[in-house]
Length: 119
Image 1 (cartoon, rainbow, N blue to C red):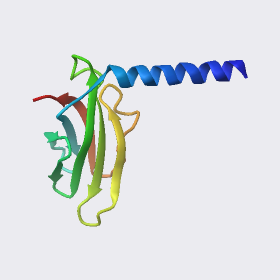
Image 2 (image 1 turned 135 degrees about the vertical axis):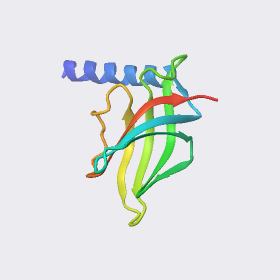
Image 3 (image 1 turned 90 degrees about the horizontal axis):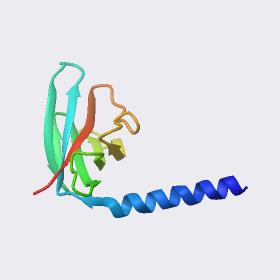
């Protein structure tokens, strides 16, 4: 019981520290690959905007990074939808330093966060 409470306190403290130490960015640089034709692409999506790529749309809700280091440990909140059906392909946070931690599962496209962008 004590171990569980101690672990909960450590997790809450580290989450609070991460929120205080993060800076909100104006956009994010994303990289992706079309698995069918092997083409790679890089796009910059401004916060609150949607980018369209062939059959998918990517909306950036937020991008946060450690204070003073936009390319280090950036994490972005994305919504990726199928343009034809409107169905969500991915909705959540992606972390630049650990792309496999919260990866998008799609048979054709793979997208990951490279860094946050600032003005």
